[in-house]
Length: 582
View (tube, rainbow, N blue to C red):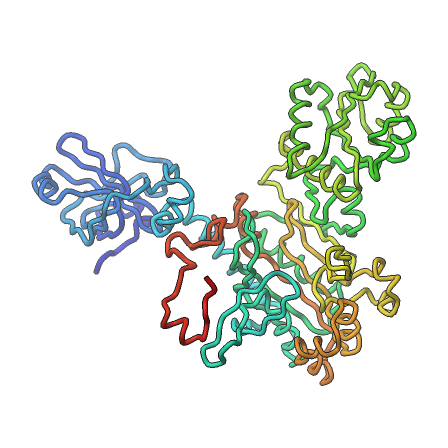
């Protein structure tokens, strides 16, 4: 027997017990003739005491960091207790030990405050996974997984696996494609989501489906995006939007209570897409703080200030209590909005001073009376700072949205321990792709229009006004889930494909299986998919989903531990009938 107990379970009540522990050496400390070793496993750390009688053995078989050892001895009370760990009241007085496997000196310290950089730790991810902080992230991920499964199982959902090798239908992000040896010059695709399969399961009468499933998208990467990611994927039959929102709002409440001990007594607020764009500048608002965007066109234009008069949009935010910002701070904000990522040419501001006076960076064009009009429009009070951007509507709204988030960050209003969920509803069904000169689906081509807008599908001039029967769940400014009520009639689905520029032949080639299924009694249905990695990272207070994935890729989509992707040998290429272009 390698162990009688783990390194995290022994307490004072075990004093005098003969035990055997196995694990990895975290640290070694020598005090004269006595040696202390911290032994670590998945469950915790226990201190081992090697007495003077082991000096010769330790000289002959020196221990090192990350050695795997088995140690036997007696549980004793520590004289210098460590209140920072659960086992801090005891230690093991060693009677014998065995080195099970020696270890090279690790390339970085395997502890929470490691000296290893990101790339180095990614290369040696199996060592990084030993660190307690990483282990806690994966434990949280497992608990969220288990909580979601328990909730869905209790509501009658069935976990059904869907294929990973499917047909490529490049309507959204780029597919990862897989060559078929048995079908030369033909390719599978890895699924971007199980969308059509879960709809087919509804046609098959399974009523409530879920899957915690890997999905794949060949996209450029960032902190919250990986080429392979995990979804909590769900679908329900004979439901409307209200049924979906209630079911999965309750799932989120269940997860928050089990994982964080947080209770949401009230229903999650709901906001239309139009209001989200108007007041927050994006469709995933962070509502932990206010600072809404204010359209200033009627207040700021007409004063012969060309920057405003020529702009499609003049928009402001009110930063509470920031009137005393220094010129240096304001210049810094101006440079911030001029960055290429934001793309504005400048920033205009007005200080509403504590004495009631208002001074701006454009006093030449706006007297105090007009600036008081700004303050009234922004609901500013003495002590506040008004920040204004102007330019093309889409760019300016997006830039102000980013500035709002930046001010929230600087003012400490985006506390990662505060959680504010939100439903965003009534999205546009279509958006116009200028570069392609056609309408494209904002969500995906299986999303149903709002019932009252279905008849508008016959009128091209109405496309910009059609709302989707779709919804996103947003948490602290991050979209963590999205879904829709689906189209379930063949004729409406064909209208949708036609609206997206697909010929009947193309639609039948790509989605004939789904159109055919709709002719055999498809029920009304809808669903949602949660970004499982994102949800875990938010619950864990992290900015990046990589911290909550056991073996993530880097920002170039590479697995630096495996050195993948990599070239394959010529024999494999020949079998696949693939000729590489040099």
